[in-house]
Image (tube, helix red, strand yellow):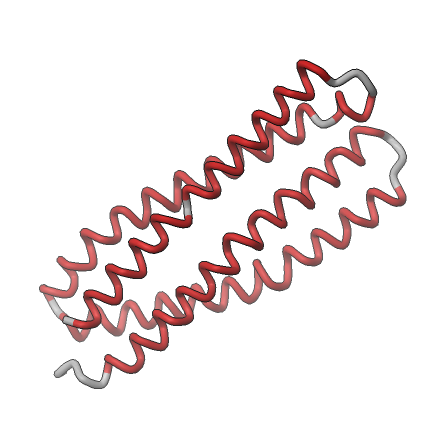
Length: 170
C-alpha cells in the first residue's frame, strides 16, 4: 500500500505545480494585452503576438498536465487493486521514460533553444525577431523552473518505487 500512497502523493504534488504553467501563461497574455494597450514603440508593439502565443502555449501545457494527473490519481488505485505487481512495473517504466525525456528535452534542448535565442537578440535587428527571441527565452525559463522541480519529484518517486518494488509479491 506504500507504493499506492507514493504514487498518489506524487500525482497530487504535480496537481499543485502544474497550475503554475497556467498562472504564467495568463501573466504572459496579460503582458501582451498591456503592450497592446500602452505600447508606443516598435519594440513594445512587437511583443504583442509572441507574448500572447507563449501565454496560450503555457496555459495549454498546464491544463493538459493538470487533467492528465487528475485522471492518473483515479487510475492508480484501480491499477494497484487489479494487479499490484504489474502496477509497480508499469510505474517504474513510466518514471524511467519520463526521467529520460526530462534529460533530453528540459536539460538539453531547452538550454540550446535559449542559447540560439540569445544569439538572435544580438544578431537580429528587427523588433519582431528580438521580441520573439526574448519571449521565447522567458517562456523557456518558466518551463525550466517548473520542470526542474517536477524532475526532482519524479526522481524521488522513482527511487521510492524501486525501493518498494522488492516488497510486492509476484
